[in-house]
Amino acid sequence: MKLAVLGGSFNPVHIGHLILADCVSKQLGYDKIAFVPAYDPPHKYLSMEVSAQDRLKMVELATEDDERFFAEDFEINQKGVSYTWDTISYLEKKYSGLLSDKIGLIAGMDLIPNFHKWKNARLLAEKCRLIVAVRNEKETGHENAAKGEFAVKEKDFSLEKFQFPFVKVNNPFFPLSSSQIRQRIYDDEGWRYLVGEKVFEYIKERNLYVHKKS
Image (cartoon, rainbow, N blue to C red; front, side, top):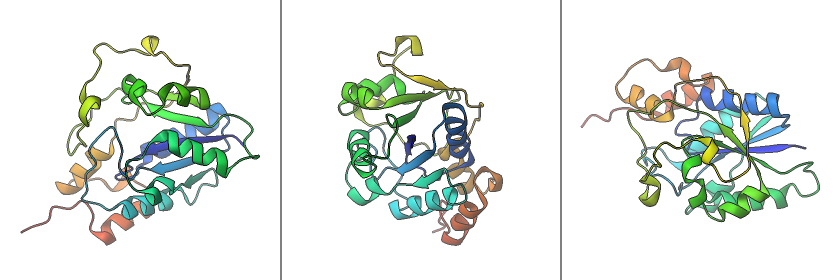
């Protein structure tokens, strides 16, 4: 089995995440894509308006109709700061004897410039196959602010400067972020078709991300 991991806050999970996972599966031959919601991402401050269990449930709903995709609850259950090194090590043990290749680690261009600051970055790059997804748009709206050293962006960064081996996935340009969806919900603007139907219904039923009138 070829397994790849797509981590994130998934606050909320949206169709862009599913499109990216589909591209990784189709183009690079991965049988399974694990969507891993972070409990507390080390590289940015996470909006706490929605619980970790809500984020996990939305990922479960978004992935349950595609046999290639599944929600992995390791980081949610562990709590604390979520480090990719720990997650990959856990998945290697969990699927010991079933993996036919290194676990693929999907990362967007927004994360790549600071990858060298991740926990055990060099060892992680050896342990995994890094899969880089290009995402050029600037996110606006209810953004999760970057933490500490991760708030420093490298000027004029390009993949040619990246010091670790990687493969690139040719995913379509899709100018959408979770922060933009949260903002649109908060502002009571159209967002219905930016997420899957089950995720839409869950957000509506739970009254998530809405402007709380005092």
